[in-house]
Amino acid sequence: MPKMKQEERERRLQHKDKFHSDGHATAKEALACHREYELDFEIRFFEDKSTQKKCGVCDELTTGRASLGEFRRYVACPEHQTREGIMVLQEREDRRKETRA
Image (cartoon, rainbow, N blue to C red; front, side):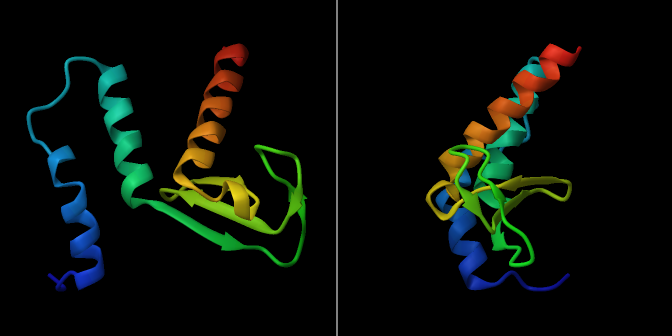
């Protein structure tokens, strides 16, 4: 197993109180816990200079993007390329899914 980089180790140690192995009482609780994990460790910000799109939070045209985990991608301007900005986008995505169901 490859050795963890010092920077990654320090980042994980900041959140060590969130790691646990005792499970969750409900599926909703498990999902909320997993989302916290993703926001703490799986969020990545980058640019797609080939095209501008509207930021999912403020509608400003931007080349800014964010990924969360392997599959979720968001458009986020530099101001909203934050943990909080991505939380807003997740909540909006959840509401859209609920209205479709």
